[in-house]
Image 1 (cartoon, rainbow, N blue to C red):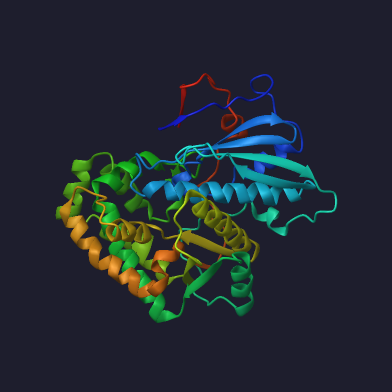
Image 2 (cartoon, rainbow, N blue to C red; image 1 turned 30 degrees about the vertical axis):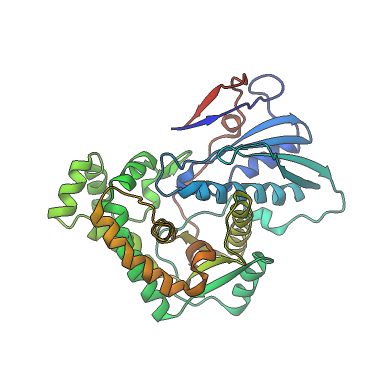
Length: 383
């Protein structure tokens, strides 16, 4: 559970739906992507044209949320979703961060201005259908037109570094396969995975359903049994090559069976919360554009996160053998991204293929605009 300081009050009676079109806009906004389906936002309804987004991050309990940047990317994606959804209802979203809100709990004020002449953004149609596709995709290369549309989605201030062709995909597959061993043998990562996997599910409101992984039934059944205990994980990894089958199915095959890998690069090295929020907005436009083109994505962020830990000489695990193994992998990532390494904010694979049939869904809007104690110093536990 994530603990966030909160002063969120929903106007009116508890459970009352917000007025239209605010209700419809927020109902779309909640479909924005977030790491491990954490949904690091809650809504405070002020009136029919105003609301606030109360953000939080999971840096204190998730090794992947380094300095809260993953959650900040997610917040940016959600704010961009608000902006896109608003156009479908003849509104323009004016979004401003409250300057006195803390970095770990940023607050954004949103004003929906009537804009009768505004054109509905065509990406609005992809808000609910966009999802993570972890299964193998088509190996055909992206067309020039597809790449141009995706590159246009992140302008200005961001560019796309394409890693395409067999040599680049082979290098990316080797990196992802090796990095997965760190991910699957590290105690700190195990604690995250144990919390966020929803076993025996096709859909999950606040976790990741196991059926979305693309593992064969036997491996999935064994993985569920093993992950019930860290001692079991250590035994299988030490004596029975326990990571081999999951890494082949989750990383090696999908890394080769795709159109390309890519990195989204900022024009300058991101430093502030707002740098990452803006990056998240570009990520969402890219992802929605991909969905509009019938292309699918799978984020590949852990090598980037571990490389930054090492670059800044910050330990992300107590296991020395993991730290030693991570160093050459960070160098390998640097070879792939070149001078763009420190400017990279998002890495993923992409390719043509069907949308995922199993996926994370979202908490219902009523739970995201829940009424809580608003007295100073109070805290709200959000699952």
